[in-house]
Image 1 (tube, rainbow, N blue to C red):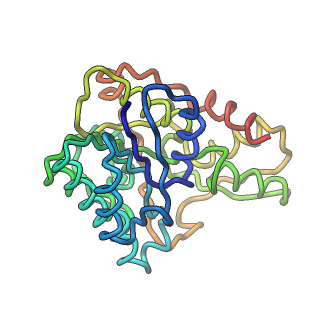
Image 2: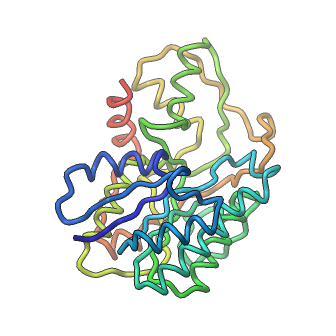
Length: 284
């Protein structure tokens, strides 16, 4: 039986993985959070891995507060970069496989065509920089790793755009949402299904892959669809990023090309609207 360790136990992706793997027969999944294996403590990471010796590590834990990262640089780099250095070195030394979750924020958003895995990276905020450093450390450590960049993650769990919009639309008659940042949402349950697909695949192919749902939208389009599906009467106004300044800059375009993961792991990618419908039914 494969021993699979998942970091970020209370995060959106890990929560979806827990749901999917409750009755797993071939693998034993262990979900660790800050109390079990803190990504803030390199000694604790090494100690935990040496004692438990997983066969596969899914590194879903991360510092994801994009704006806060600008002022908590050391902490965000520790969680997103230095901890990954420890995990990836341990994986290589102990012949364990690693799946690491990265982000569309490694790109600067200046493209006008979907980003491929080998396109140049150039983060425009500190969060994106720390995630890119984690990718580079995995590459340097030559581990048998799969890196998956994803974007705009949401689910029935945790804090995310969908749940924020539902709260605001039920509270206010009118809201404004940015319409000049283009990408695609990722339903965490869909990504969790992909991870299980990769783990159960007969041929493990390491490398960098992109995954999000299918489609091309703005945050404004996303909000409009949420209101439509929930039959909410809130008026949604489109605004530019300049009208809604944030501490950390966001890429204006972060659409990901998913052809590589589709072909390599025979992944079928749902349309974003279909996944949103599925999630909203569960949020009910």
